[in-house]
Image 1 (tube, rainbow, N blue to C red):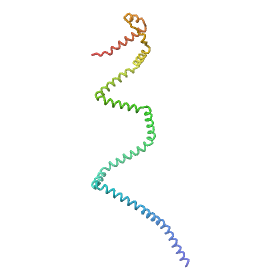
Image 2 (image 1 turned 120 degrees about the vertical axis):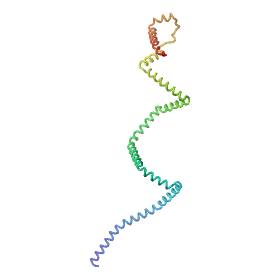
Image 3 (image 1 turned 135 degrees about the vertical axis):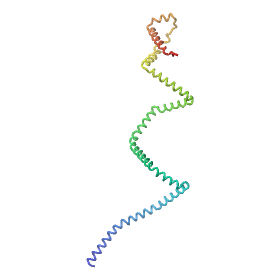
Image 4 (image 1 turned 180 degrees about the vertical axis):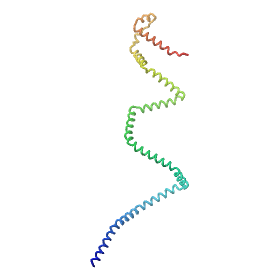
Length: 223
């Protein structure tokens, strides 16, 4: 064999090796695809069988006219669908934004509710609801309205009693029973009253009584 023929044979072998290197990945890929097809074929058959069974189940209720109506309605309401999708995106964005706040605020709310529970606020609320239910079962609507009007007037009276002057007077009056010894009280006639008028305390008391008596004139309702 001549040198020229040998070089041609070497060139042919080299090209064959290059072709083999290129074909080998393709062959391996084809083998992998074939294996994948063999593995997926049973699963696809199972899915098709399940789909056929489900379609057979709804065949009696399915009408092609209903599907066509649905498609037409969807095409007529594309703008509404786009708006709904935009709003859904806004809701998702809000949820993502509020999630960190909820993570910090929810435990605080739970803690605050726990404190209210420990303080008996919920028990008091439940008792108030029970009272309202009993009132509703006992009194008519008109009577409850009358009670409400009376409570409003009573609150007005309590507001007047909370004036500083009224509170001072009530506080001093509340201390009188503790300072009076009823066991020393004796029967007293007209001459006894005249004699008691020489007591400075009695005089002061009579002066206070006169002021209170003068104030009682406000109780008279002019007709």
